[in-house]
Image (cartoon, rainbow, N blue to C red; front, side, top):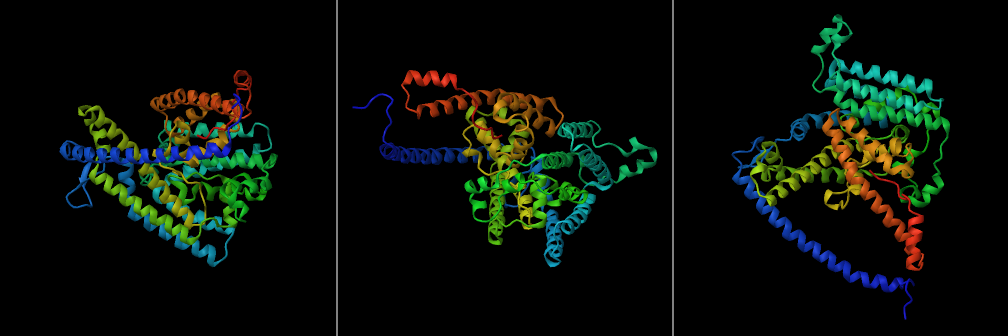
Amino acid sequence: MTVPGSPVSPGASKMSSVPWKRLELAALCAYAVVFYSAMVQRSLRLARDYSGKLYGLRAGSIPGRLNDSSDAQWRNFRGNLPILTVVMAAFLIVANGLRYGCSLKGRGASLVWLILSLIYLCYLHGACVGFILVIAGVNYAIVKLFARYKYCTGIIWSFNLAMLTLNRVYEGYSFSLFGQQLAFLDNYRGTFRWHICFNFVVLRMISFGCDYCWTLSSSHFDHKKHMQKCEVCYSGKTCYFALQEKGLSVDKYTFLTYLCYLTYAPLYIAGPVVSYNAFAAQLDVPQKNYSVGQICCYGLRWILNFLLIEVMTHFFHYNAFVVSRLWRQLTPFEIFIISYGVLFFMWLKFFLIWRYFRFWSLVGGVETPENMPRCINNCPDLESFWKSWHASFNRWLVRYVYIPLGGSRRKLISVWIVFTFVAVWHDLEWKLISWAWLTCLFFVPEIVIKSFSNNFQVISEGYYWPPLQFICLLSSFRFSEPLAW
């Protein structure tokens, strides 16, 4: 006889769950085969029937097929990939040759990387590199002057948000604003708008300032406790999280290292985002978590994924349907296929762009977080989606925004501030702010339901009488899990 509320044998529960998991896996596999077969067939037919009406189709590298070049971001990256690869090879040959050939560490490695990165920036931005250096210098002065004051992080945030706003309002400034004698410099603004890339520089300036302030106050990171949970650190290596959380000595926060961190060529254009602590720690000791063989496999996988998106853009013109606004002529099922295809194309596009620069950084000896650690098909809810989409930015937000705002204790308030900042960081447009607030409206119910479910599960494991479980649940309801954006 089983008493209500009494525990069930763990062995019996585990045995009974195995057949259900096998059935679930079989059902998912069958569904995937049917769904993707129908999707591929319908996508090929749509691309064939509407090829003459789609915008952005150009002659492709596959004979007899047009390539979907309607996405400007992917078109520019793909078109500049040859010269970018030449720049990467030249940078790595010189930087690694001097670093390992002359045994450069710390200051020496910073100087070499800074010189090479400034040459790269001069090609990108021309005379506008001066704007970057001036703003970076002012931020460094603010950090050093106010680091020991209680509201230092507030001052740092205020300055950087002001710069982010002014850069967008004045569209990167004109040299003529500062005197007609400088107006001629407007003819030498480079090939890439500097204030677009500067959004990432803002994240790095805030990271430097906060890491320095927190180092001066105190470090609460328990490395021994972390080693017990981290397989990488337990094996004798140092994981990225430990590099980020361990405070550096004060003499590591120099102007030279700071400028090198802001302008480091492999991560300058698109990231991934790395904290100052983690970056500076790898100047002395290059990353050892990835072997040469693993990095080579990483590059090979990138090539295979690049071939995948080439096939995708040549045979399935998803993005061109959106640009051409032809989706209005389609059936609901076809609209779903185009929408799903566009989302997958965006994921694969960013996957390739971010992994290209991460590969460059790994070869240079600097480990960064992976920006796309999982496929969008493996994200069943909003939290897992945002945790896996631009994951290095997610880590940055958690460290420098979410936790300082109170963490899980103020989750329902923090989510609005975090997503508003994300929208403003991308661009000063009301549609982005509306997108951020709409996302929060969908996110808040998920947070509440998950927290309610977690507390119910914890109380249920105590095997209380069911009515008592409900009373305990209401009295102990709290947001216990930290949010992963």
